[in-house]
Structures are given as C-alpha cells and as structure tokens.
Image (cartoon, rainbow, N blue to C red; front, side, top):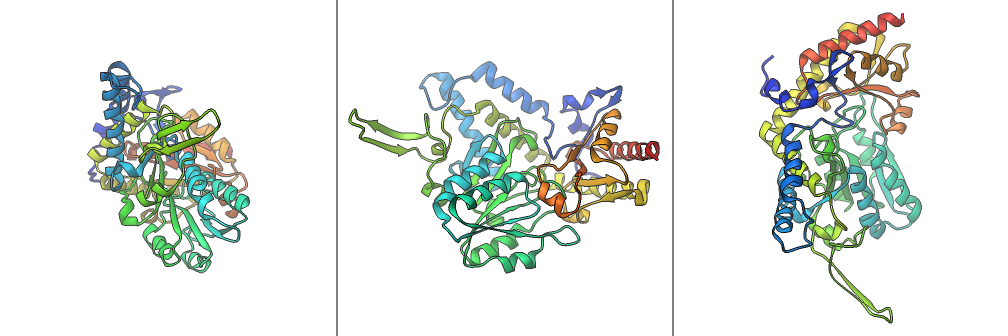
Length: 417
C-alpha cells in the first residue's frame, strides 16, 4: 500500500517509540488522549530554557526581548496553521477545556439571557458540554441536544429542526473523541447564520488530524489542545473572530493583560484592557509550551495535513477490516465508515469488560484507552454502561502495529473463552 507519509522516517523522530514494555515493542494507539512528541519539539523547548529563558512582555533586556519575539511568533505560526487573520485571533490557553470555558464565561455570560437556547450534541466531550450546562443553569437558558443516527453520524435533520430564533449558541465537536465521527461544520455554520447564532467548535480531535481553516468552515470560535498534536501538555489555543474578542471581557485578570490601570486611595480606579490577544493571557504564560506548540505545528505542516488525513484513513480502513476478519461476531465496533471519521475505533469484545481488555493489551505493550472517554452521555445513549475500548491512530502508526494489535486481541479473546 503506497503511502505519501514516510512513516519510517517519522518514527525516528519520536524517541519514546523505541521503548519496550514488558519486553515487547511499544505500540502506542492512544493518540486521542494525547500524542507523543518528536525530538524537534523537545529540543525547541530545551533550547528556550538553555538560551532564551526570560519572562515575556516584562523587560527591555535582551533575553526578555528574545523570549517575547519567540512567543509572539508562536501565535503567528498557530494562526497561519488554522487560517486565522493573524495572531490577534489566537489566545494561548492550557487546553481545549479552558478555551471552551473562556468562551462560555467571557462571551456566553454576555449574550445569553433567560429563555435563550444553547445547542449541543449527544456526542460532545464533557469539555464541550459542562460549560454550556453551567452557563444555561446560571442564566436560565435551555440546553437543546442533537441526537445521532443509527450509523453514528449527526442527525442533521434534527439539528435543523432544533435551531430557531431562540438559538444563541451552537457548540459542536468537529470530530467525536469516541466515535471518530466527522461533523460537517460548514453545513452547521449555514444553519447558524440563518438565525444569527454563534458557532463554537471543539477542534481537539480535528485540528491534529485533518486540514482545518477557520474562515473556510466559518466558525466563530475554535478550541484545541497542543498535547494532542505533537506539542507539550499545558498549552492550547482558542481562536476567536477578532470582532467578537474585541467586545469580550477577560475571564482572568492580572499582570500582563492591561494597557493601563490607576487606583486612588479613595477607591477611584480606571482599568484599560490590553490589545488582543494579550488581554486574555493574564500572568506569566506557558512560554516554553507556546514555543513547543509552534514547533509541533511546523512539524505537522512539513508532513502535510492532507497526507496525515489520508494516512490515518488507510490505517483506520485496514484496522476495521482486520478486526472484523480476526474476531468476526465476537467484536462490536462503533462509529461510521472510515471515510466519515478520523482515526478512532471504539469497540468491545463480547463478554469482556473494556478495562480488562485494555489491561490485557498492556501485557503486549499496546496502549489503548478504556472507559467513557469523558463522554459518558454518549455511551449511555448507545447502551454501553461500561464504556468502550478505544484505539486511535496518528501519523507515526503502521500497518504492522495494527496486525500485532489484532493478533493480540484474538489471543486475549481465546484465553477468555
């Protein structure tokens, strides 16, 4: 099978992939939870601490100027990667969860009124569910939930029926972290524009795996995490339309995010927020994390996001075929066809607890996720009260690894019979 991605060359950039678990070569297929990091990202962060370490936007000495330049450049790199107008539309955060909470608290609190409606789907990660539930409870708004079809894709007809003049926010994932389902954001955006609703997209599972252009999909906000796309933990990004960010007040306030502040002994005061994106980045930021994220983006751009998408599609299609071939009726696989999902495969082995399956796979040096994957309502909707086992692929995974994975599952099942 001809590949545009040189997997062998890529794998040499990831030191952890040479590790052995219980004498067996590590097979890491838990990429939906977090990806591994290439040596280029590790070195970029080490170089910062070795050579440029200083606080940003706090001094006029050489180190601070150099650190500030690198940190600002990181925003520009991320902006380019997702098609934003510029760095003013990119706010660095800890992760997708923080980004979505900022939108709910900074934007949502200002626009949602009693009786308004917020639309989400049943397939949302808790991070794109709980902030909206919290907001709705606080403001007296209503949560409307879009269901999925029997093929585990979004019910667009139901979505169109639910959206009305009361809809103020539509918060939807671009790719389900459980089913892998790819949602048509451009289609959803058209529905949102018809009622002047704001579209918030959870891009945690899409930005690392497929080409994403915020202006093309026409979203208002997009949130994603660095650690799922070869970058370090503790860093992520929130994209927001500049005109919306300008109107929003920051959630966190403190050093580095103001233009000026005055305070008199009698209590009189005046505060002017800083320019974008800094008014949303209070305190000393994760400078090394931002630099590491930028290096991860450069790595992904060098490989090519379309190439990564195609590679994962081939891996997923192959894995689905091998799983059904090896286990037949003894495995339940969830999610749409491979062309309608990212490289995520949730499954259950008949008669086996998903956690037990994951533990057995660990004996083979194979890393997967088991449980509800922070999407408990979706599992309840599917009648899966113990969750699922989830295998998820990335640019460094191989067909050989899938063969070993499936062979291990067959052995595990036979031992349990």
